[in-house]
Length: 439
Length: 189
Image (cartoon, rainbow over all chains, first blue to last red; front, side):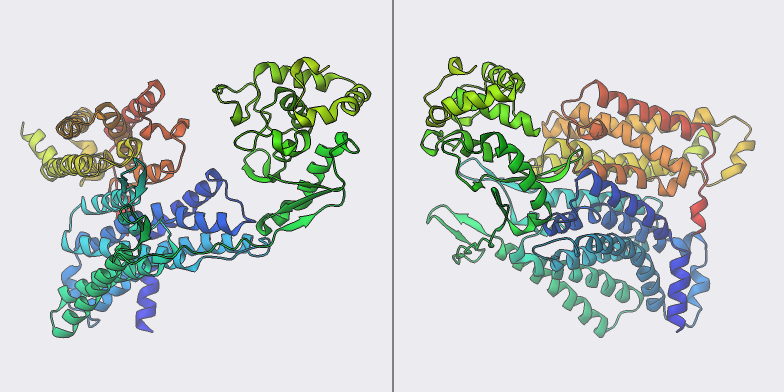
């Protein structure tokens, strides 16, 4: 009971309290700038790693260092040494109260994201290991900061600890290596960063940070009084850190160029995981749109968009009924919001499959002009007016003349458009028309 | 002379110079050993440490008492902070030159801007907490597109806008720290 009361007092008079609004504002900013989509677990899971820890972890390290120097600044160290409460428990209470504020900030953000996502998401679920890692990392930073502040009581300790923690995380996450084929890939060190998540090593990453927190706590305990039990605890904590680092190193997949296979750190072959795509969800009568189940919340609007796209072509030769839209995409936009993008469906409408280019895109200019017209109708992305290298027609970018022809076609009365389409649509799909054949 | 020496001692200039040296060594080590980090992130991260060290040294242990000093102290404060900033710049440029990486202007720009942020933050929150604003701003720009106007600390090569932001923040910070006696109210915690 005394400890709880002390915890409440320490929490109330704690510098980390000032950090909670900073952490929340930062998280809100990150969710906004990174275009968080609360209907997707993939987006929520990713931003749970990125939105809090990059600031909360180093900031709590600084706050921990600052709080550790409080008794010295207030000149009450000697006075406190005479109290009956053991010094170790006093330190533990203060460091717990300091860390608790950052954890509260993180849990508020995580709780808000879960509450928004859980009722709306239609596929997948939360990833718990990254949350465990983030919680352990925040604790580890807080305790190490406290330990640094306790050992090096200086005005500079808090800022130095905070910035060094930030830079170390940044360098860990950015650790790259150049492969023999010239490509850059992350090294195993990047797997140690809080913001990184690899399912194979996630549990070891959490163990590493939990171990780091335990090492600092045990060291703090040992600094207060040296005995065998505390020494053994420190040794155990160090062992868990070493185990975590070794297992993260070993568990990180790497490519064995000599034998052309994926191996772990011990040289064992990693069997390729068989990806089983989930059953798509389809909707629509005249026009059917099938999407990954996670995009189900946007399916109705996608069907409406697709129906509007196909409407002027209904009944023309080559347009089956119902039409199944392929090449569906997904876009998260600040202005338009999130949506299933049906623009890719246009290619299958205006071109027979054999006429498509190397990358499955339209190469014929007349087909592209009609594509531009159809996309303009639905407010899609025509890629007109953008500067591209037009040297590779297989990339499917429209030229200025093509765009102009498409816009000219769009200005025609609907009856003339329909008449031209009825007369030439078969040839258009076969890829035998040129821009000169368009009205 | 005695006033200047006492003033510098009250600001812990000795440890500050040591930390600026350590920051330059760390920058050199990072640039040489971990040169695979994208240059924009290096330009963002490496000047943070010297910036917060300068921000923290602006703290006065005397508070309001300084207002009744025999000589006006704003000029002392300005010269002291500007001098420390120049030393920090020189050390960082030296580290980048030895490492042979052409990031000097970007590092200087970010150092000046972040020092300004630290001094402004110190003016509002108390100089012991001067590190919060540069840290939060750096974390916020981490995932920002480098082309964004807000991402000035990591824009490489250095262009007009980012240079303006760095210099403006630096000037504002220096003026803020020079004009008033910095207090540390959150010290009560």
